[in-house]
Length: 169
Image (tube, rainbow, N blue to C red; front, side, top):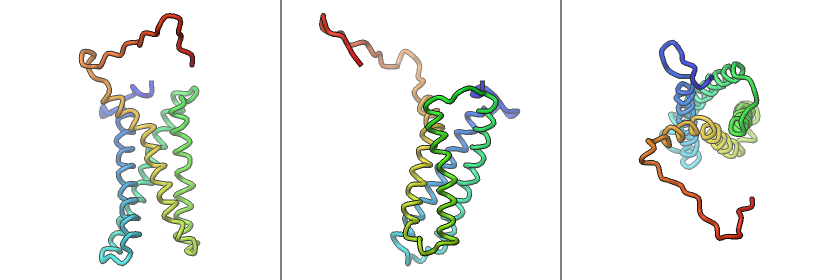
């Protein structure tokens, strides 16, 4: 199984994806936070340094995206079969990332008259990054935290229905 595959150093593919995905989320968050600060205080004495942090963290986030995307494609090609609904949503969110990054760079480099649209594109991009993470690394982290010993897990019992009633979906 792809989730059980191990590399030579002993780190599982899932652990590598979670680590890279978490860093992807962190660097994207840094880019988003610096963008918010720059938009809120454009005449800040630290504006030049913040622009450098914004571009650098955004560039690192794109490189991490490429790394994780290659790992995901290799694992999925080896596994074969259909995608689960969660994986399909993850794929759709991830597919939207590159066009938005390209749009953002095009606005900055070629179409400066559209700069007033950058906040919207950047915000959508960060929400997309969060959704990409939440449907992959976030899912596995929640599952890992949720897997506690059976004796301390809450017991969920069926709610008895009165005679003559049935539950219909």
